[in-house]
Image (cartoon, rainbow, N blue to C red; front, side, top):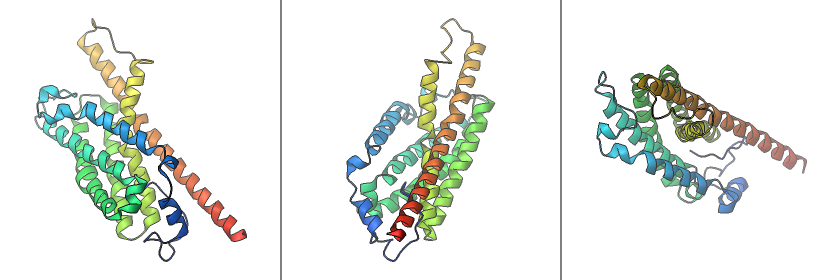
Length: 254
């Protein structure tokens, strides 16, 4: 998986980094990729704030209250959280340019872990968690849609890599990266809503009011949480492709 795309064909030696473009990319200094450090920092903070409560394996610590009607809900939720953690950590390793170019074996290994130990079990468990979620129909439908797209993009990217279609592999994994980060985006949107358009009810609010507020907040954060990153990823892919074609035409004219 990588977030570097190119529309040019695979010239001889391109797989080994022998092409001029690959060499230029490999020599790119870290300050030319200013998003890598902040991305890892945001992910680290997100995991530190959300994951430890599920490492106790105590339903009382769960942010999502378990439903007695579904006794399997909490164990599957823990699987979803842990596999999602594997996915988001390996995703950060995948988009780290220095690791990708200097240690391709680590890149391939982390990519396999991303799909097999992260996305596949995380997406399947996400479908089950969404089915039993108390967060309302909107949140359930959004989570199910995200899980299906998450699995589909990762499997497509892995299939392209196994077939040697590296450019296609990169495009599919950019989409998968956007969906992986959707959980972070939705949590940030939830906090923004709390301080703007959807403040929490007062301490005197009754249970039905709290439930209605929580379901509305979850739905409003969930849908744009994955749609916006995916649209940005598609825009980025189109712009990169157009830029690559422009450079190719310029080189031919030169």
